[in-house]
Image 1 (cartoon, helix red, strand yellow):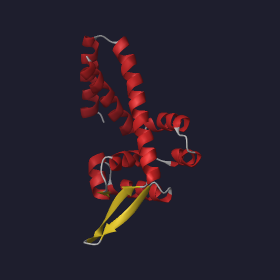
Image 2 (cartoon, rainbow, N blue to C red; image 1 turned 45 degrees about the vertical axis):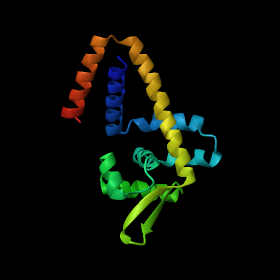
Image 3 (cartoon, rainbow, N blue to C red; image 1 turned 90 degrees about the vertical axis):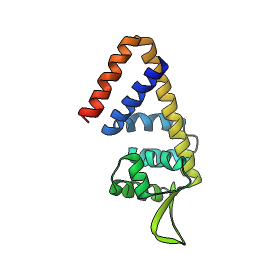
Image 4 (cartoon, helix red, strand yellow; image 1 turned 120 degrees about the vertical axis):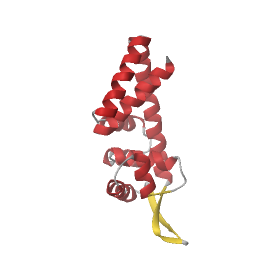
Length: 158
């Protein structure tokens, strides 16, 4: 049954991200849990795309904007705008390699690593809470129906 619950929470997250409804919940949780007062000022300034750029960069040493766009399924222009905001907030730096002056590579700053870590904690906690609620409120057969329904919505409506 845990695999079914994981599938449901992943589908719900995909639906939320498609409509950018996660931001308010994410910001509220993060504002409650961030310790550093300077970082606390930055949390409300970031978009959903910016948070997901931080998440993606936390899994890699550095990436180009094109690679981030491909991983997140966002336009390059969207990545560029969000990355510029992240640079303004000193959460990301842009670098060029000596052997390739054309490509811009993005890297997390120490503050960016903290925000990315906090964002990952937020997802884990909110998913855990949702999974607990789902596992107590639905039978296995109901979970199968929910998975089928959400998969249909994701594949045919979004």
